Image 1 (tube, one colour):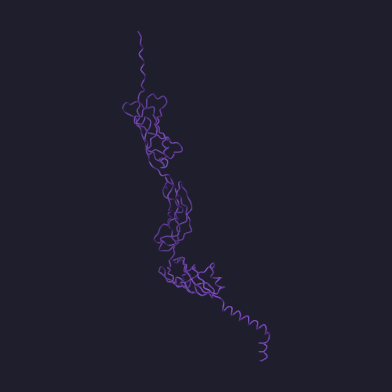
Image 2: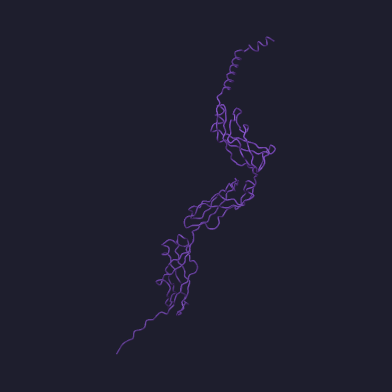
Length: 339
């Protein structure tokens, strides 16, 4: 027995003493390792509802994104790796068999943080979180396109905005989707537009202040046209007389014998342009069957001649002017004199 003990303690004595000394040194280093405090104000918290240990489906937690402030104590070597500003720190708190639709108070514990064992949680702000669980459903909603801004001066949106598809599936809290029937698009910017256009737009991700989800984009068509007004302008009028017509034609009510007032309909910017009236003219057509009727004028329709650059202008309704048909006065022959 003595021989066995002697061999156990004295054999390779130098190696054993070296190992013992190294063990003591390592223990001292670990025991007296420098620790420090690490504060993080960007810790994301995830709340997971469980029912009998199984994650509950179609349940949303409000608020969806919870960020807290936490103070940790950890050895320097650990803190620099797990708690440095570049490291992601998060907490996961599980709630067993929670109630739906009522406020729940949540207190975070050290076990909620996925960090090494030698990291201590010293403080959390806020100390308690208030969350509500919402039941999630999917429902078909009608799409409503909305606009932002105003078209260019003199232009307006023509008719309703066209949307394709007109209906989409939306996922969100049951109490929200139960009371809505439409979902708006993100605003369609029409500021300063003067031409029609179409493009794809996302749908709003919020209804009645609650977050919803939809993966669909919709195509929106916006028709923009010039604002139309009616304005009275003075234009020259010409008389088209058939060949060989042997009567005089007069416009007794025309200004200066050849100017008439017409109500024109068209884009506001064209009718407000001072040079527009100078480019227009009107005409009336005399037919061969119009014969002199003393004291009884003819009422004939006025036609408008519009140059190509003003093709958007037209008469606002029918216009008529009175014309008089008279016999051409023949020159009397001079009396021949003689003695």
